[in-house]
Image (cartoon, rainbow, N blue to C red):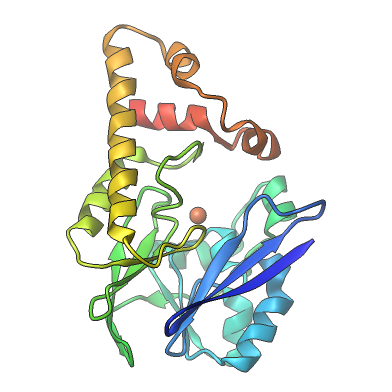
Length: 266
Ligand SMILES: [Fe+2]
């Protein structure tokens, strides 16, 4: 089943894409279009829908928030079809320099990203104002958000995702996420163009809620550790069993236990 929905947020348009080999997609992903820019490119399994959209709104350039295949899945193809540059963090460039490995479920749900040359993201000016890249590691090492300082728009990739997080990928770093959230909260913005749950107003409050949740979570994990509990006992004590379907689909690559493990690393 395929989903392709258009969301208008003033001059910014969000395209929500979902794909599932069986039944409704568990998750959708947004890419954004404004002033000839596209921010992220959706998953490979939705490539024809992305082409159909971009044939109507030809892009001038592509900005990537990070290398994950639901964001970079069409970067190489869009670059070739419209002869535009792809820009992002140097670590995104390293990842997309060649094919990178993804797991079986990622092939099934999103599809594989093609290699693409990625140029360094730098401050740019568009009709809407000044857009600056800000490195925000944690969700992935290369994660970068793009802030329009004149409009107060934050294209936040996967920095937000939700107020309360139920699972982490195996390589996510909760401490880096906390630092990144604090960094971004020092800036002014209101619209949060998240790639999964956008919030066109009060975006800053959303990120503050997520920061408080992650800080409280780390506090709870360390409190139990100081009482002498082992990692496995902490996981058992704090687990609310809200990750089961995702844990099952991803064969454990995304699960609640990864959040605890990340909090214990320091
Ligand atoms: Fe991601």
